[in-house]
Image (cartoon, rainbow, N blue to C red; front, side, top):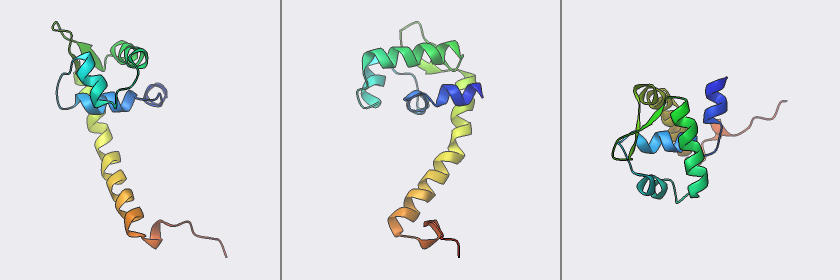
Length: 102
């Protein structure tokens, strides 16, 4: 349940997602995350560092740890499902519509 609490906080998953391509400095990460507020980004980074998913490198850039990379890999099936879901919604697939009990 701790992972759900951590990832349920706004922006936590987005930060992990953005760092999967490589380390980013604070401003670059903020830009990649739709310019979220500095205070929220600092708070989320602190939480992710304490959870050992993110590390701050000597040059001050933030990067995923091995645990953080594992969290990203765990998210990939959700991303595939999300793509399928978005496609079904765009196509108007009736299988995705709520069925009314008879």
